[in-house]
View (spheres, one colour):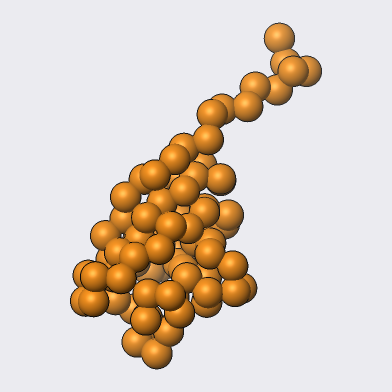
Length: 83
């Protein structure tokens, strides 16, 4: 909850993204650790943890325009049991 994490529909878990609040220019690097936002909230691109939202001064607003930039995508880990 207070970590610097984010939910994204398609990015692989472990991906690091820089999220910038377009209203105030504040940014934070967060790690994808969950799926979301749900399909009924298609206008929303990501769901920030409380910790990340606090760093971006978005906690009281709840929803704000953001810019999302990929910083790091983890390498694909191959399953050693599959051949």
